[in-house]
Image 1 (cartoon, rainbow, N blue to C red):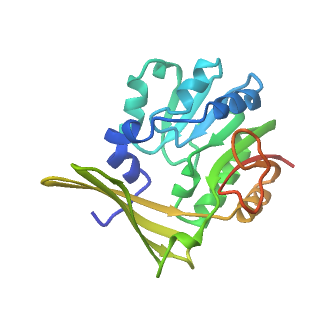
Image 2 (cartoon, rainbow, N blue to C red):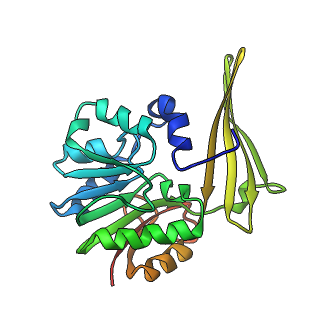
Amino acid sequence: MNFYSDETYGETVAGVYDEWYSDYDSHAIDVLAELAHGGRALELGIGTGRIALPLSAKGVEVHGVDAAASMISRLRAKPGGDRITITQGSFAEIPVFGEFALVYIVFNTFFALSSQDEQVRCFRNVAAHLSRDGCFVMEAFVPDLNRFTGGQVNWATKVTTDEVQLDVGQHDAAAQRVISQKVVLTEGDVRLYPVQIRYAWPSELDLMAQLAGLRLRERWSNWKREPFSSESMHHISIYQHE
């Protein structure tokens, strides 16, 4: 498969996503519920509901956007999934109606947008759907170029007697893009899970926000609200209208 689209990752990984990525930080739910201030929340790249379902269980009206029909169907089949309004489509476009007190995107999902243009467009559409006193929350990694040797990465992330999992990727530093595969090897079977991202530095995200009429309000290193520093590997960034 040489063609990679918005829904490729979700459609490929939907069957194993909950097995691989079931955990979440409970502090994230508390923070997001607080920032919603009793209003509506919109999750971009909602997936199978890892964050949306516990947030909805706290009484927040959650809406979501996702490109992959398979991810959406799994969310809708879960207990509480019927309480969440889900729209299929690109979260760069945000094809929903109305304003939200909280728009959020977690687990590095923003970087699934494949170009700077798409990422800027996402910020602008977030601003258009954000209430005047609302906020846009993003969780993302801080790029670490030391991961790559000769523009490549090849890590064994799991090795057991009956399974090997590899993360294999190529890095284009000029485009800030990583094209990779998660490779799962078992006896007599090889499965490929393609992932393509376009990463951005925190300062670049802040400029995107400014172009959209938003400004950085706070930045933490984690959901416990610990200070962000040059040593931080992740960031929680909160943007609001200027």
